[in-house]
Length: 214
Length: 154
Image 1 (cartoon, each protein chain N blue to C red):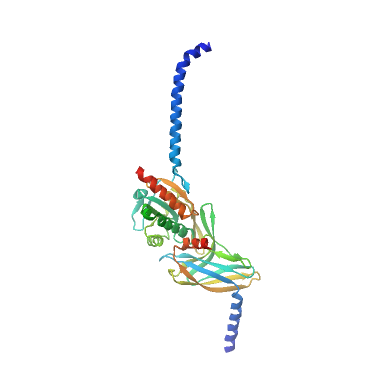
Image 2 (cartoon, chains in turn cyan, yellow):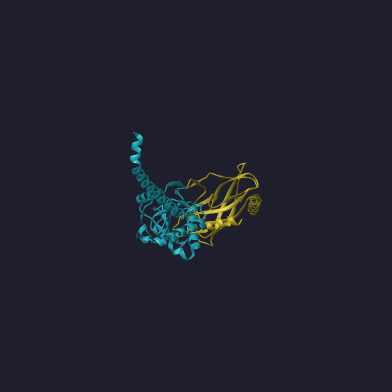
């Protein structure tokens, strides 16, 4: 007797559907809200929030001190992999980073720029220090052993390769800069072509959105 | 003896007159920090006839090569090229982000304000080589953005 059954099941079903309705509405609200809060932060560069790579690094600064992401908590970190004998893309990326700091004005100290050498054989601490300082004295050049350079590059999905040239060698390498928020989470991939203004706008967003949460 | 000297002087004059047709403008070299062994040189070369840039020499470095920088996805690659085509009348730019002259194994640090002598060798279709001597001023290491800004200003 389907009718009979349904009549009896009626109130129970209504109750169940009400519960379901509340649950579903609640779920949608939760999704909606989180979507909204995500939408309020939009970046001009590639948002890679939640990336399952580039969690941390352990490298040496030119004074021989070990540096990890933890050391820069509270600051936005912009990281670029390169080598000092690079005639072109590295000076361009570092000049842009210097320009970004200039554009940040009073917030310049909230951005730490890190240059990681993919050529530790030639980028000895002294060269590295002088090189980064030529762009901005607050930039930090970091390096490690040849073996660990490969590991850190892999962790950041950075490609590099030695290419022989004229009795010497050059390095092919990825030209993307990475940006971490003040909590040390990897947030942005910045193309070598991205203008300083758009990088500064995103760094500024990260500085501002981080402060109330911290 | 005197005659010989005059003859060679004349030859030099005649050949330099021919060379003068190739123009190299706005040359510059990126400064280095101490112990940095390589850097780039940039310029504009215009040849009145179809020719090829085949060689650049400089007393500042042990090895000088003409390089092409290419981006493959986000990977920067630099390669020595055997020659760079100079189509007649066209100013070919060697600038950051494209072609450049690579000065490898520098004999000394290249400092801002220095002048770096460069010999630009161009080969015509007939296989004849001509060379142009220039002095390239050294610009600061962080001139990359400057170069780009200049490009914007053009």
